Structure formats: C-alpha cells, structure tokens
Image (cartoon, chains in turn purple, yellow):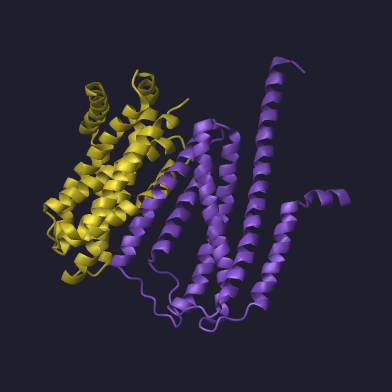
Length: 238
Length: 224
C-alpha cells in the first residue's frame, strides 16, 4: 500500500507542490497589497505564470510537430499532444484570470489589445488541433495531419501578432479603469513573487506534460499489444 | 517550369469543367454569402453613417463563412468518386496537385465574389468598383484558397468534416480577414493607397507564407 503511494510521488510533483506552497505564502501573506489596484492585483501572480505556461505549450507543440514531420518518430507526436492538452488548459485559465483582473482595473472584461487578440486566436487554433485529433481515426495519418496543424499554427503566430497590433492601433482599446496607467508601487517585491510563482507553474507544467506523455505511451503500447495478439490468434501461433 | 504550369492548369481546368457542368460550388458560395449580407441588413439598422463602419466587416465575414461551405466540396468530390487515388498515382509531384486544386478553389471563390460584391454595393449603398477592391479581393482570395485547400484535404477523411473545416480555417485566416476588412474600410472611406499599405503588406505576407508552406507540406497529407 505504502509502496503504491510512494510510486505516485514523482520528484517533479513534490518540487512543484513545495514551490506552489512557497508561492502561495509569498502571494497572500508576504507581499504587501498594491496601492493603486488593491487586492485584485494579486491575480497577476497567477495570470502571468499561467500565460507563460500556455506559451511554453504552444512552443513545444510547434517544435515537436516539426520534429515529427521530419523524423516520423512517435515520441514527438506524444510530446506534441501532451503539451497541447496542458497548454490549452493553461490558456483557458490565462484567459479567465485575465478577464477577472481586467474588469475592475480596466473597467472592461475584454479589449482588442494585440496580446489579448493573439492569445485568443492561438487558443482557438490549438483547441482545433485537439478536436481534429479527437475526430480523426487513430494511426500514422492522424499524427501527420495533427503535426501539420501544429506547424501551421506556428507559421501563423507572427502574422496574427502583426495584424492584431496594427488593428489595435487603428482601434485604440478603451481602457478607462481607475488604475489602468498607474505605475506599480511594489518595486522589486513584485519580481520576486512573480519569479517564485512562475517557477512553481513551470514545474507543474513539466510534470503534467510528463504524466500525459506516459499515459499516451501506455495507450499506444496497448494498441500494439492488441494488434500482435489478434494477428497471432489468426495465424494460430501462440 | 512550363511542364509544372501545364500540370497545375490541367488539374485546375478539370475542376473548372466539372463546375461549369454542375455549378455546385460557386452557387453555394455566392448564395450563402448573399444570405449573410441580407440577414445583416435586418440585424443592423443601416444608415449612411454605419454602413461604412460595419459594411466591410459583414462583406468579408460573409465571404469567409461561405468560402468554407465551398471548400468542403473541393475534396469531397475526389473522395466520393475515388479519383484522389488516381491523382496520387499520376507521375507528378504532390505540390503540383496542391497548386492545381488551390487554383480551382481560387477561381470558385473569385467568381462567387463577382456576384456578391455588386449586391453588397447595392444593399449597403457603398462605392466598391475601384482598383483597390480588385487588389484586396485578389489578395484575400489567394490566402483563403491557399489555407482552405490544405485544410479541406486534411478534413476530408474526418468524421464531422463540415464542423472541423471552419474550426481550423477561421482562426488561421483571422489576420488575413483583419487585413481585408481594414483595407476595405479605408477604401469605402475614400482614403488613399498609402493608408492601406500596411494592411496589404500583411495580406501579401500571409499569402506568400501559406502558399509556400502549404505546397511544401502537402506531400505529408497525401502520403499513404
């Protein structure tokens, strides 16, 4: 029993849990409240690391999709799908936490600001990536086509950003909230908390991707075993 | 070089001939886009002020949505008739198959626009018969057919193909759609080329990037 519990404890999990504890202490007890924005500013300490995680996810999906098309090695496909799943979850949390922060500070839930638009469109592209995988029958062809979406998303990203940037210049976002332009009063404290929290979320990201990768591997192994079993049953070799 | 062009033209011409005989795709695209325009004239209270403001957006959203319905058909016919295998057996490289199919889709969406844009001019009471419109329309249609042909080929074997194609196509073409809407908006406000130059540059960059990447990557789709 104890061994089973110990098996579940991955060093990465322990590390990210410990760092998460430190980050929570820093965010809610140690760091003083920012005077311009008030308590709501503390959302930033989750929002920024989660946004970083989703960006990391997109980078890994693009990189490993490219590697899959080049090398045709299954491990790149597993890495791509694992980081796409975790990246999309992080992306959803990023969008939600950003909106909750923006409402009191900017007085709007959403604006046409370039980074926001880019993040939202990329979120949709990687949701489509996962949906495509869900709809397509398993096999080498699915992996190839999914990798193509990963690469297309990477090619599109700079163009989306340029267009969104130009668009927000032509339609300046209406930011009228109480503390939209005020400088932070926290100085270097902000950086320290942000660093600790980002580190915690980065380890969480790696842990989740690694776990998903292992599950994916087991699923693939299972399919392979079933295939071998059915062919040996057919040929009568046991 | 001449050989490649004639291969691309042969595939494009085949799709064009089929289309001239049954008129499926162009009628579907134009009909759908016209309906979007008409519905918006009810959904928005149009007057001289806001027609210029919302018109370009409605036009390009309509063409993008309608384009998807047409693109769905592009490879569906090849699969239904099992002619995709025949294309793959032909001793030509895969990027030429892609360019030929993209040429066909480009022509379909372009012809549909010849029907849709005059109706748009009438419904929204805007002046659109200008050289700027021709350039914007060509650049946008190149991008739509480049990305659309690639995704249509990918989604042809997917369960729920009609759902999957727009979900992949629309987010990817968003920057091109922004460029089309913004430069059309400059045009209907009577501004000069230099005002829309940056947007046209984005459209050109999009087109070049996706025609090259798609032609290069297409071999991975038809690989079996």
